[in-house]
Image (cartoon, rainbow, N blue to C red; front, side, top):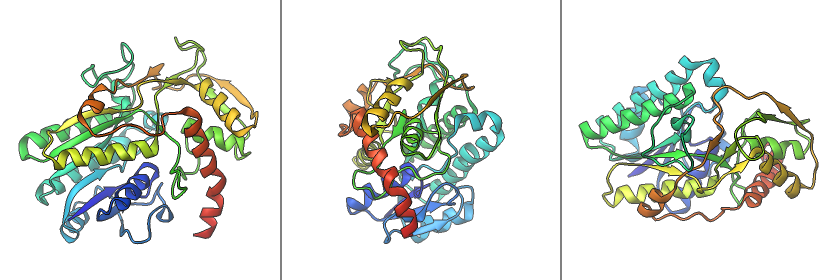
Length: 330
């Protein structure tokens, strides 16, 4: 029996694949390689190049590899892009998830772990945010993920397939063993952008919005190390295998850092005083997103290891230094 990881050659997906293979699991990856890279994965892991919207391909992969569980990462993830191209996001994130669910149900898949997002909360009324708080996405990206959560819930009720939806807050950092990390060109993750600026790969860092109702006027986010997030998925899979009921969990650390906090940390860790430019707010960006993590701590066998901003930045910086050499070797 195997675990299918969609989007497994991407940033978070590749960390998940390493986490699973380290634990001795049988893994197969489905990725269209539009933003993912084969070299980020262990050589022994089979990679099927294709789309989660290809129903026949999904059925073939599920049958051939006797897929028992699916961890679904494949998606478009850039909030401003979703505002510019909402239909593209609904097609790739929502419609393709519907195809995946249909193939999973008909293929006898038992468990699905879904990559959701704190963007489903929109502009929350208070912080930290609980899973039971109202959802109200303010971007097509957030809406596309919420629609997928609703489909998961309904498919679970109708067909008995059990799921965990993990609502990610801000994912950052890189594999401490330097096997994988954020490798996408023109990435928009703040810590990725900051370490690129520290290494001279960007000429500056733009701060989008300086007049939010926060202590320093910049947006506050709950940053979670990508390796801790991969471990949270493994804990969610173990929970489902034990017979756990379908559930939704916030995935964060329960405290936030402002944009200026992050830039200060990046300068401190790198020793480089890179340029920063203040800019207008971007559409779809809330002022503060911090997770209430009591549910995930009370339900899953998971505790973070890398809950330290300087550690997260340091791992991202070390990966960025190694990235060019890793690309050249493949």
